[in-house]
Length: 250
Length: 76
Picture 1 (cartoon, rainbow over the protein chains, first blue to last red):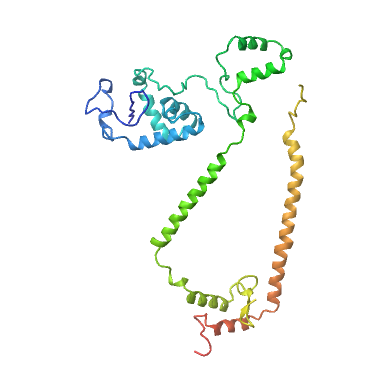
Picture 2 (picture 1 turned 60 degrees about the horizontal axis):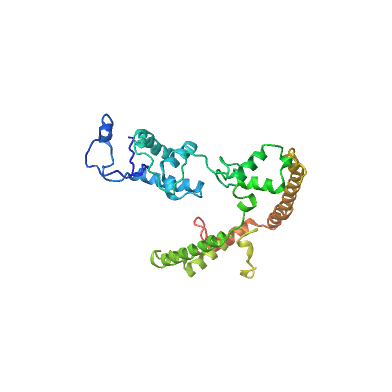
């Protein structure tokens, strides 16, 4: 049951295009006519999985916009690594329509990243990205890179720093620079605590049934008396705190 | 600017040589503290309780209080 849809951008989109009962020529011999989801309804399961996967993928790539995260390439690249059972459904759907994909050409949105090229990243746990920070070098940079091919003792301190800055965007201290994000996090936490508190209060007023009769003062007193009569935990616990001679708590 | 070469080997060994004796010592201290702070007083409390315990008297107290179903208080 390999069903895949594509929007005008050639990206995977789980909503079917408007085709009222038309069997396309490249679909003959397929089970298209047996698909369970009606033609003009989105495949809810596949669309949920798709959006969930893109959202989770976007955490791995903090610089990426949500549009990039939803693109076909991201799903392809990451499902290979993770191999999640849910996304295999999506990937099978994608690969089965590989021929159709290429026919759409390169309709890329202007702010999307070409994921088939080596990427640069600033990450604490992966120190060496696939490509250097500055790809296009002007003449001074080119001459410096030539000098780098010789003995490095010949480089001055400033030249070494310039070479570093050609290769990397942020240094480790710059990557680790503190931010004001914690205030937003703590503030958001307290806001949600407050909302939850209101919900709990409303719930206690409107939802809870009457308390059991065993919670009443009289019943509780009779219960305590019975526990003392039975000598519950007389050595180190409950009845150990009761003075049986003077009939009061110790 | 030439820095000294950092230590490349024996890092785990160094860490273990420092931390393991401390870990063992602290564990022993924790065990000893629990033994002499909790278990010995508890054993003493139980011993003291049962030294002066008269089971029949306590049973009759409980019977008079009316908690049993098999033996009702002597009055009824």
